[in-house]
Length: 228
Image (cartoon, rainbow, N blue to C red):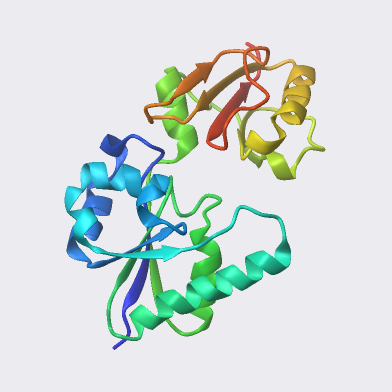
């Protein structure tokens, strides 16, 4: 019998926002995989270990997932990561892979999931609170009301967007191109708010395009709403 690979969302940053199921999955399984070369330095581990201290004593499996657009490098590391996971699954052991937010939304786990499934293994997803829902709650605002549309955009890949569709926008993955993203936002005539490192000790809130620094970090979530 082969083991099962679980993609488990640990939420956006605040360990109190981890689900009861995520906590149980970590407690019940001995092999915990995390995207990063040094497990204990990853954001996902640092969040989860606060809610589940016994995580520190588990078998921790580093899966290196480089932050690059180099297709060849990504392909090589995704393939290597999948084989590392499969080696554990072949022993009949389950593996819990920790991922930020929810594993269904722009998650690095997806690349591994597709490969592992193609090789004949069983996978399951455990939902977590998304960064944009957590950020909206932190700002004490709704994301959409009545019949408003909500658009979720990976900003770094969509710098040609003019945010012209009706409704409200969530801009994710903005960090590396923040100066260009700010130009788009300034032209959109929308109310703009941003939460950087939501739920983490270094959290910062910005309430206008002008306040947002060009060097904002990777975990920066922007909400751009139509003016009422």
